[in-house]
Image (cartoon, rainbow, N blue to C red; front, side, top):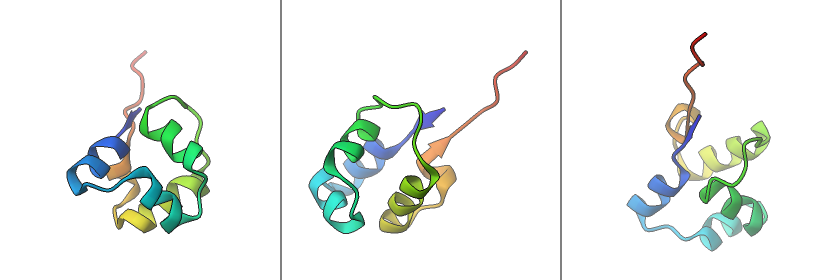
Length: 68
């Protein structure tokens, strides 16, 4: 799974604090996702990020199934 949050925020010059304020998510939650320190993020959190950033989920998270 590839998490593109840091790339999206970097390209738009958006700070984690701005995202926290705009989404109502805790700054530590966003920071953990940004720095790729979590593997398990609730769908409701991802939806809030997508709504705030106005991106589809597949732009934020890219998942390719593991090969057998």
